[in-house]
Amino acid sequence: MRTKVCVVVAGLSLLLAAVPGAAHHAFAAEFDVDKPVKVHGTVTKVEWVNPHAWLYVDVKDPDGSVANWRFELGAPNSLFRLGWKKDTIPTGLQVEITGFRAKAGGTVANGRSIMLPDGRELFSGGSGPGSTPRK
Image (tube, rainbow, N blue to C red; front, side, top):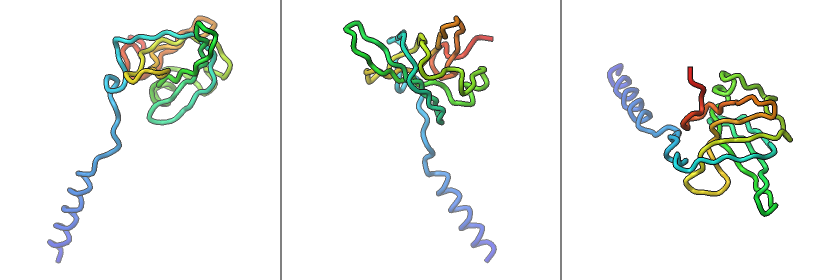
């Protein structure tokens, strides 16, 4: 009886191990390193969610229309380790963001760094090139 239980447990363990986990994409799967972007705008929202935080910015286009850009940042824990706090980038703050555009186009990008009005540069802690400071 004990042998049968061990075989059943081992079999169930193998089946559970075969179930795919939640996939996490690499930078190159969604963003294009050959399409750098730099925008200046007003922060409308910051989402502190896993697996990536998101920063939303209203950017005025040359024709006067406003586009809401969405920038993927690193995980909230990565941002905290880089010195961010929940109130580091409040709604309404003017920022300049550099990053890399999504392959699908539109107003979505992977954020590299955020320049604050006081001249401080925050790194996004993401997976894109230059997203974390060199040590």
